[in-house]
Image (cartoon, rainbow, N blue to C red):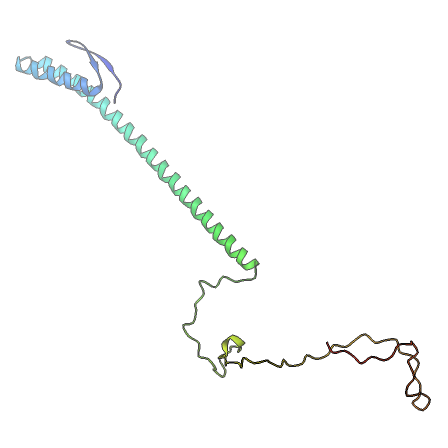
Length: 184
């Protein structure tokens, strides 16, 4: 379309782009028509038509190239969008997997109950200390419940003596006096 042509017409050379050459031949055809030369008018019109066809073919070619380029651009954009969606899905999947691997299930999308009635007899829930209503405790010293004693490793015991033979104030065979067991 912007290519410069040299046209050798009946009146000499005409130089320019197809659009400029068409305008020049149309002007020459009007001039020859006003002077009454029908043969020259027809000749100039045929030259203008030739360059008009060249211009039309160039425009069609450019339109076809533009369509191909636009289609390629749309395809590339669609591929980029698909890649972006795939990477986002991959990131979501990795996040779900990492949440699943850490033991905590992602329940943010799971339906949540609005309210659970406390104390329902058979609602399938286990009562936890947090679900019980806290009662105020006295602020004085508290007696904790005693813990059960742990069993100890058995000692090496001295040979068993009968009660009749044992003296009440006698020391055990290891030479150490018996100590009462200390509480933990």
